[in-house]
Image 1 (cartoon, helix red, strand yellow):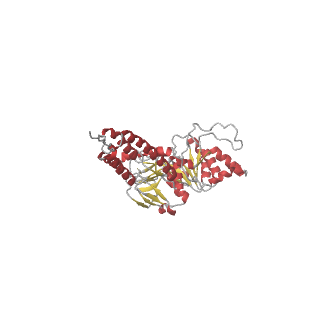
Image 2 (cartoon, rainbow, N blue to C red):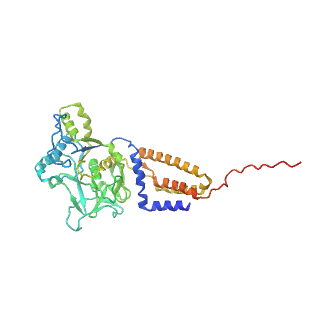
Image 3 (tube, one colour):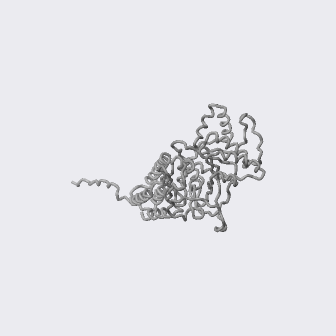
Length: 407
């Protein structure tokens, strides 16, 4: 009993050990399907395939005008904007930092002309740590209502990469940094610290633009939540990250640039087949170039979809872990009363039932049950049972037969 309690307390108090619960969470999310309505989000992937003429979509694609699958010219981006704006999306967000090569600068004005038509344009940028923190750097307006310790937020003091100046003047910057020490496929930062100010990351900025929410209307309690108008609450950790379910990306619509160009032409021609694309209206359109090796990982679609639909992964209270420890300690006292075979079979049945329960809760309510601690404690008892002396004290005594008296 003492070993079980000490092992559980050590697990709960040591952050590096508790981090292993992410392994169980990944397994749960990989083996469950998201429920609920689709998010008002459409992901457009550019650069994975060659452009096809809308006049003849069955024709063989023309050879690309650029070298390498990762390079996307301003002209291709301008074609996308021209087609997308016909469907009137609320926000158009580019994940990649839009910096053109010198030979493409002649096409930059074409992109700029289309970008000026966008009602809300969000462009990816990257923060950096300057060698000299006192060196001049652009000012970034942060949130004014912030409580809690800011020391655990990822800190930056400069802007490393950002779009060209002409485009910056007509857009909003969204910072796509994913620091290795706090971010992975399950944890995406929503907040950064820039020269003492708390600023939003790319997905949170996209949500604020989509909801028409100003920074002064946002209240942040670090380590607890981000409070938005209309009663929205976004749970965040002390380091400004939010736990996401990667499968929430399935709640977003996905299409290629060729599909969008064809739909725009059919819409202009009055064809009913393009009516399904009218759902782009008032949505967030997220633009990705997956063939570009410098593109961020595909986590922002899942993050934005979770923010729009209020489908957040919630961990069960720590009280649950304490109850499990107390129950396991009580079970350790009675372990000697049962045979080792029964102990092993019971552990297998409990593990299977617990995993099924955890899968159901994560799929239905996004409620995350820990797995490493409960299952680890149970199997610790199983492996420890052979070391315990087996007792027969609680077996039913056999009846004693008294021989008849000798006559």
